[in-house]
Image (tube, rainbow, N blue to C red; front, top):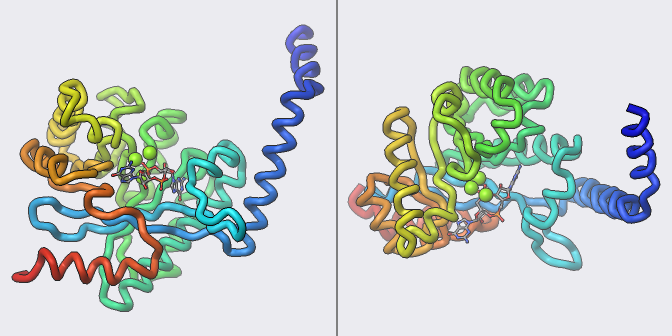
Length: 285
Ligand code: C2E
Ligand code: MG
Ligand code: MG
Ligand code: MG
């Protein structure tokens, strides 16, 4: 016990970790300032049905439009707030911005499903359900069924019992849930049975290599079958080419997202993209 305390105290004065902590604090400060300066925005990436070509919806993906550095991707800044309360601050901003956008699109006749990535800390933070409920009430004209929350398989496992409760509560509001990056999180089948998600998102690492790597192809096939057994929908992410799309369709996965369909785009491009897509594919519907 005493030894442990001594160890901790030593770590407190470790110059290396102290420097790291300082740097982390600084970035967090900059991120909070940038949030207040409205430097963050959401890009949107379409999800489509490969068979019918119908647009299913859009996934919201955060970007930092830095005044000097240009557009910064989430992989560069989200890790700095992971596990901190700031993650909840950002999460709330993302959720509100996405729901607000859904309502705006609805006003111009675009009834899109919108998916929002939710961190484990945010989902399990006290009051998440109540906040979500008041957001849905505030934007009363949107359908909760059109809002989908994407949680990482690995994140949900952190506190599985709690996740099951919160996901269940939120689904009773009508909101849908997706298990993101599915296949990378080691979740057990019994868990999959208990966690009431609506859709599995096959991780892009498997999709990307499935044309050349038989193991990855079998994993993709396996997830598609798993989804079917558990009566869940399934979507493939990272669909980069027509060949990927065709193989997925043959395997029975009809929903897809990826650069081969469209890259994430700024909000103001979404309506035009939908129009173009529909003109190209939906002439007779
Ligand atoms: P994710 O939710 O799994 O999102 C998919 C990522 O793959 C996105 O990267 C997307 O731009 C990229 N992507 C989509 N299609 C393709 C493709 O065909 N090829 C390749 N190579 N990549 C593709 P992005 O936007 O950089 O986001 C990375 C991750 O950061 C996301 O992974 C998500 O976990 C996280 N993230 C993004 N925005 C948010 C947010 O608002 N909140 C939270 N909590 N996490 C977010
Ligand atoms: Mg996602
Ligand atoms: Mg993913
Ligand atoms: Mg991912």
